[in-house]
Image 1 (cartoon, rainbow, N blue to C red):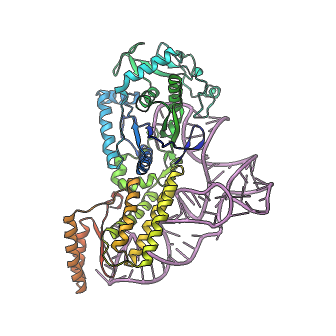
Image 2: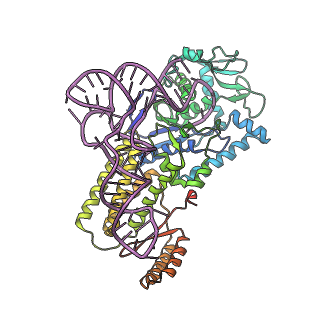
Image 3: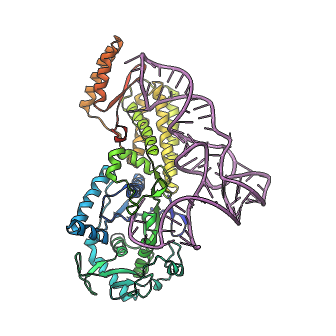
Length: 467
RNA sequence: GGUGAGGUGGCAGAGCGGCUAUGCGUUCGCCUGCAGAGCGAAUCUAUAGGGGUUCGAAUCCCUUCCUCACCUCCA
């Protein structure tokens, strides 16, 4: 498959000959995660599922930044240890992302558990003269890494003239960034240069090199990490190892709201907890796929509501399939659906293989849903056809990480019993009592659709926004 | 100011030299006792403005205007 690489500014063929190693910059755990984080993580979740569906082995690492000024500040205001803050939000993270049906990464390394790795990396950089010790800490000397700026396409002289570079006269050069910051307060670790804390960028270098080695296949994150975070990671890692850091840099666009970037500092975020309550995992996942991953997507009620409609079509399709009868299929239907499946699978696969084009892939997916619903509408959806559609549909649902609400055998029997009662009443034109039964069924989260010959039912996901 | 990404029908969103997706919406039907988040049909020929290149451009080049992101922490 091809993926657009931010560094070379071209689409690059992903090397899948052995395993695909992916490092994704995760979250800093000082507050609830929001839908912006969710988008990036869901994109990578589906990328990973897609690769695995092709039998490719994936090693997926996503870090937690659990040492950071924001965590420390929050700990101070709440008068607890920063450890307490970070573990609270790590817990919050897993609660949210498990509910979003995001597969767990192979590892979630934490910065605080890799201090030794960072120290030895810094040591190497000091020895090679890429870093120096100043009054406030150990700094990376940007001028020593001649390719600095290659990822973000920034020129160092322009960066220096930029007004927003911090002024710190303990640094040799304003562009230099901290690898280790001296500190007397907690959290604090010993180092050969003095006690303190690691800088932000060094943790990802240390942990990715440790678990994935040099020149791994994909390094990812949100677009806003390109500069300075990823730029600095490249500088550190390549200076240290002398080798290429990552083969492909894959960056996910921002989630905006009213056209503006969603971020903590602007105070316009929608937390994962909030959106899960309001829209649920399937709608959110579909929303995150609704635009190409590299572009921004705008969070709006209208867009999300539109996705509910689509999701209801999927539920309808799914229940038509699993409740189909045993009559013989009409030959032309078999042919029609055979073609639809073939076409859809091809389009779906090609779309994802071509720089992970999820809007195209989902539109292919919905074509199969529609084709199935067409046959169902004319009451010709029989089990022989379902047996063809279901595996294809399930596979795509699985890659997209979508899950239709399931029903237990007990519920199923109960519902079938109620439906036959209701149909008896209907045939007697006792619609009042029939509607009482329908109400009873709908209280179980099940919706009925009367066809000519039979009554279709489906369990619908409860979606907060609809109540 | 610099750098990057964009501006496509009422809306969302693909396409990236010829075949002008797809979905939502809207309208009208079908089905139904009603209902439907189901089905059908219609609607919508769009590509920011101005120049080029070409037999042919939404797609390539130039230019103007506009939007967003990054240049500080950020997914």
